[in-house]
Amino acid sequence: MKILGIGSALPKKVVSNDDLAEYMDTSDEWIRERTGIVNRHIAVDETTTSLSVEAVKRALAAAKVSGEEIDLIIAATVSSDYIYPTLSCEVQAAIGAKNATAFDIGAGCSGFLFALGTADGYFRTGRYKKAVILGAETLSKMMDWTDRSTCVLFGDGAGAAVLSAEGEQLKAMTQGSNGFEGMVLKCNNRPVNNLFRPLGPQTYSFTEMNGQAVYKFAVRTVPGAITKVLEEAHMSVDEVKLFVLHQANKRIIEAVAKRLGQSMDKFPTNMEKCGNISAASVPTLLDQLLEEGRIQAGDKIVLAGFGAGLTWGACALEW
Ligand code: COA
Image 1 (tube, rainbow, N blue to C red):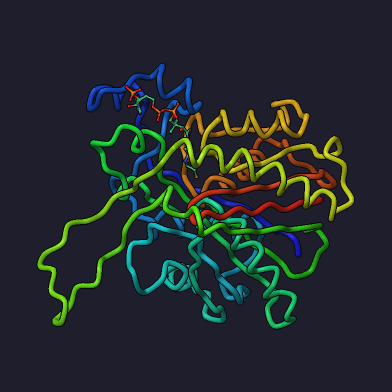
Image 2: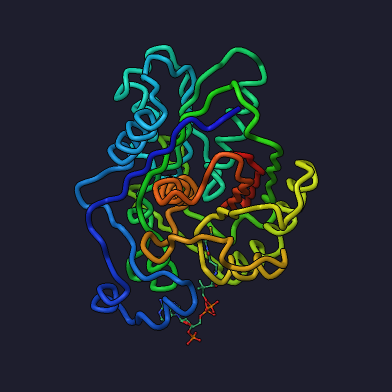
């Protein structure tokens, strides 16, 4: 397969660490030092669907592909606007992709990598030729805004890619899950509540996280996943031009860089301006790198995601 075009979209409202400090007992220094995050975009008038449609239209324009040519749409999200219909079906309608099969997947912050792996598998059946994959979140609505240990970390946004089954860009891919430790990062859905088990009116649940457990998981798992795809792709770690990692936290990325024996110059970041946008972070960062001309034909690039589930995914690409 080959990535033909990338697009992204962020909400207009930018919220700085200092802005948050006006609402809760936190500081720019605490957030910046522990996470690298400075600003995040927060949806006010935007929705997961509106951001997705904007990102997908940009990706289609970059790829010079029409909606009608798309035969597969996979949206990775944990914060869609509807339980059903799915986000991917809403995107299908918005871009006129009448020939597409569309479905959502949930793999937390690894979502974009999981969508890429799923599209690759569909391409290998020979039944699909051109796909849109996207990661899109409005995690701000999943936050308890009185819990300073989680709400300062996340932001909203969407990133999308148009893929063709024809091409040799994807050299190796790995994905994994560890449901045994899944409860360290969770958000409850509706509980069982019906005629036979009435619970009465329910309030929403919000994100709960054991930050240190997630940190340890990421630092333990991501270097191994990257090493595995590099071995399968017959690429040396030094040959890799850029490691485009999920943007949860700068300290996680620094620890991964150290374990791989690589300089932080090869690990671009955008958590400074976006915070953690979950499934949207990898494609959004890729879009920015392409726009800055930092990725050229022939470059060897590693993508990696990790997050709720727990899940992780990594792939090696030759652009
Ligand atoms: N501002 C100021 N103080 C805060 C704070 C905030 N936003 N959030 C927590 N604190 C306080 C805590 O209350 C605690 O105070 P106490 O010692 O008086 O109890 C202190 O800071 C340390 O809290 P702790 O949770 O131990 O901090 P930490 O060093 O583990 O850093 C994270 C917290 C969340 C930054 C860190 O665990 C982390 O980055 N984890 C990974 C999370 C992640 O990336 N998740 C998404 C993965 S997809």
